Amino acid sequence: MSIPISRPEPVTQQVNTILRNRIRDNIYPPGSRLPSESYLCEEFGVSRATIRTALTHLAVDGLVIRKQGNGTFVNQRINGVQTNFGGLWEFGELIEKNGFSVSIRSLSVLQRSATVMEAKELAIHSGDPVVELKRLFYADDFPAIYVVNLIPTMLLDTAVDQINGNLSIREILRLYCNKKIAYALSEVGACLAGSGVAEILNLKPQIPLLKIHLCFYDINNHPIVSGESYYDDTILKLRLVQAWH
Amino acid sequence: MSIPISRPEPVTQQVNTILRNRIRDNIYPPGSRLPSESYLCEEFGVSRATIRTALTHLAVDGLVIRKQGNGTFVNQRINGVQTNFGGLWEFGELIEKNGFSVSIRSLSVLQRSATVMEAKELAIHSGDPVVELKRLFYADDFPAIYVVNLIPTMLLDTAVDQINGNLSIREILRLYCNKKIAYALSEVGACLAGSGVAEILNLKPQIPLLKIHLCFYDINNHPIVSGESYYDDTILKLRLVQAWH
DNA sequence: CAGTGGTCTAGACCACAGG
DNA sequence: CTGTGGTCTAGACCACTGA
Image (tube, rainbow over all chains, first blue to last red; front, side):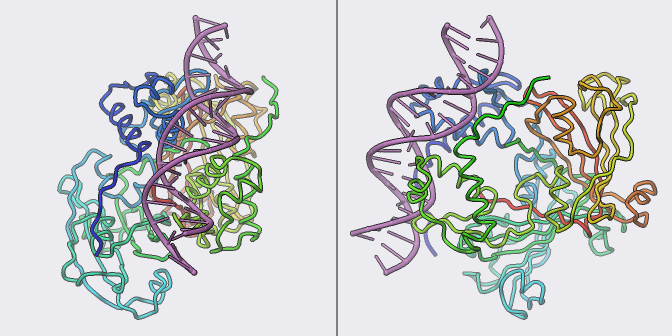
């Protein structure tokens, strides 16, 4: 297991973070115009290209709006809105954006054989061992999101019973598989709460729920983990921004 | 009403399109390595920065995967997947990605007064006139998506009865309002098919449906149009890619 | 008109993967 | 080691906005 080294953060990312914080802290108030790009160049002592990539990220996330010939403005409308697809799997973030505090409870961590469908999705053989994590995300101590994750056992560095189910999936992959996620596919749908899910989420059966199925892939385009999640969208709102391109 | 002028398309965008087409046409087959950035520089006679911005767009859309020290590879897994949030409002595109042919039928185009909620969202006064468009998207001649859009009448350049309800919302805004969309907010949820919606979509009542609420804003951060859409996600799959950042 | 963001170039150095 | 992509610079010209 390789030891994570801290290398200097890229300049463009540092600038991005600083500007984000200034917006968050109302140093650049909602609706106001940011300093010009050339000004920011001098302030940070970097080239304009660097400033621009940072600003571009902010614009894609909808945090700022750029107007040619006029300036860059803080968007006042994006409070509590997911600024990317993250809301589809970073459930902790989703819950926080909705104004709740988050906690995760691990319901079960066990090993079993993969079904045909599961094996196909995870690019393993049917019957191969997988670790099944059933977890429950709480929003202010109310059960909010039910998630079932599957990880091929062969990807694990550690024993199954050593897994801490209270971590985010990204942390789990980093700690126990030493894998980084390159990209994810997800599928959003609606379903009715079955009696099992309804009981876990403390809801009446037959209530409509949002169902999100997803699969993460590493840089070599191999599946690492799949997941199936259910939640009541009347409690948690899945809001997304998309800037035009 | 200004006359649209065709200016030369930005170089980076042309490169983007060419590479996209080459991937689509299997000139760069799935899983294969693309020519190196420096090679593409020479081939197109542009700087490396230009090539890189084009490739970055492809990578964000999940179309290619880049590996430092190795190369850029075509992702073979993104067939039929929305490469951005577009699927949340470009319903035509969504239907096509699911392998159907698209047609739009306008159910009604009428003017009425905005409710309190609607007025608030569209930043107009309660009771102000709005144009309500009810439309139905067909997938292979089966009714698939039901959409209700609201546009403040004051934004229209033309008379209400001149509106062609069979166009995409982007076209409608361009033709009748001369507005461009800067960004959009959307909210994804689940609901049960009411009897009205069920009849329109030719489904049994009480079936779970995906509900997508959205609002478009222009460059000045003013709301232009809101929308509410319903569809059966067992027929149309809303699949999304997200490359890590 | 001056100042803003939009596009593009040429070149540099670094980190990383593979042989 | 070579060649790949990752980061960054300095400078140029253009398009657009508002005064």
